[in-house]
Image: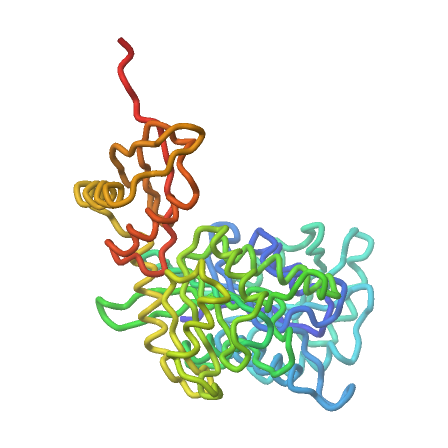
Length: 443
């Protein structure tokens, strides 16, 4: 039984503002610029103890009403149709200030053909005296509710009507999904990669850089039966240098991408095989490390590469030597080459970020590393290493007790991290070392 509520409407009527109001946070970018939302954004929402799935969609532009529909408009229409196909009920958002316009009638007719129950949210009813302006929207043939997404007026009446068409469901218990953020420069194939994994046109794809403007969460399950594992793929907007960002929408998109990195369990840094690793790929990699995330390097468009993996990998390490611990998988979102291997690599890196390092073995490895290379003298003192203990997971944290913590040289920290990674096979996992002074008894 379907429990999804789809929000539809023409561009710039306040669909994303209503979506944010219902999910209780700023999950979708809201901006005065028309056409900001392109992909469908789906999240679980709760209203008066009723749980349901809510989906925000891009603004519908009727074919022939303006220019001939371009690929972006056609893609938005496909995303809207996909949302309506999964929905139990639709909310048609209109602009009370603009009044009933032809584009509203076009959207109403489009939704009417689906046979779904529909409620019209006449948005921007910011004061009671504006409520009577909603009457003209009755011509659409659906129940009309004057609302203000900005001021939370009338939303309760709207949702009580809408949720009457949504079956009450009890959420099934499941394991915590694994959040995988797909990041990279514009037009490296992030959305195509996501669509290939979920085997559907879940997010809009175009050869136009900047097609994806917001971060989009796509839940899916990998595997079957007891081995099935829930994931949330996070498709993000392409990142460019700050100096090249020329719009507020792109700036918000980049901020959302960085937030997606922060909440991810594993980050897939996507690179373009036809271009090679760039200086800005290096900056994005630095962002991933700053957030202490497990990382997989996905080299896309491998079907178009004019080199070999043996040649490409050294070029990658020359540009980003600090990412030498991350596995690299060479893929083609277009042909499906190595997509399954990339999923297995994501799962492997995620497992390593939650690894438990046995205390006895951890100490033996640390002391062996220390015996092979003593810490250099710093500030006139030679630090001595005593013992170590794991203190955290995701990211992995190891506390090492020494006599002079402030005298541990950065190069020696790198030496220990690399040695621990080799010993425990921590490929792709971030490893954070903390040096503490050993407690002694005062006598």
